[in-house]
Image: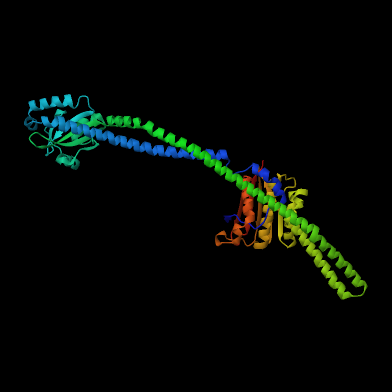
Length: 458
């Protein structure tokens, strides 16, 4: 069945006014403290998300900067130290020339820097020099990136693939960053300078950088969060004030409705009902007088008029009970429920009433249960045309539960039924919310309607 909240235009009964303050004390709407905590926690979560995103960006940029530093070091080593010393003897593989070049490389490039391996290649893929002597003179195919860098395409850094044959001497280092830079020998020949740096060194450089910037990031986030705290306080205070104003307006509406109901009930009881009672007695007396005078036709008409007047009085008294139920205060909820279902029983509707005789509810909850029942039965009688109605009230796990179901026509809330948005039950739904409870109406065409109210008990 579809779930909607429906209502009829109805005010609240008198007893509800007396219990409204008790229910307001159990207000389910967020208090100022909860609003403030909610806003501050939301701000804190936002700061954590922003901080996490900022930290990820900071680490990425720090890593990129560490790699950029490695490229700068490789360009300096390759073009500033190695390239000017690559003589014809080095290119020809002369052992003496290679020895002199090797001493320079080990003393000025491999010593005191993160670089652990140096290779120099020619355009044919031959290793012209390596600090691992076993590679000198051997040829390996150059990749696209290496050829691009050799031909002046800039410096390239990438994680070393240690499974390649030319990298077998570096496998003991486990994880390296290899950097390529194109250089020129003194005779103008294009060569490829390649060195290898430990990945752990790059990671350490990156960590030092982002660690140096992290306090600034955290400080900025902390300042931003501290700025948000007074804003959250102000916003929570304003929302709490609006909530209090809403509650006051609701109470005023309840009070005004209660006063108007009492006034109308008093006027009807003391005025209209009394006058009609007098008219009924006068008509009965006139009927007796007409009968004594032998005017049978007049007597019949007068007796009919007296009977209709008495029926009108009964209807008015039933209306008085609807407007202001004295039974609820005087005899309790079960008696008031009996009064509510009596018109349905009189109309031939099969009524099942299950209300514990010893049920004791707070005055506000009792009045709310009464009004929701009244609205549910009135909706069923007016719109549903049911043949059976079931009403139950029970307490379960420190809450009172009211269920009013009928087997009437039901309705579809998505079809724009005018029962889906009346003021009466909307107002009572608000009261149920203030009492910490819920009010639901479940209905679908051909399957009747179920009204369910659940209110917590103190």
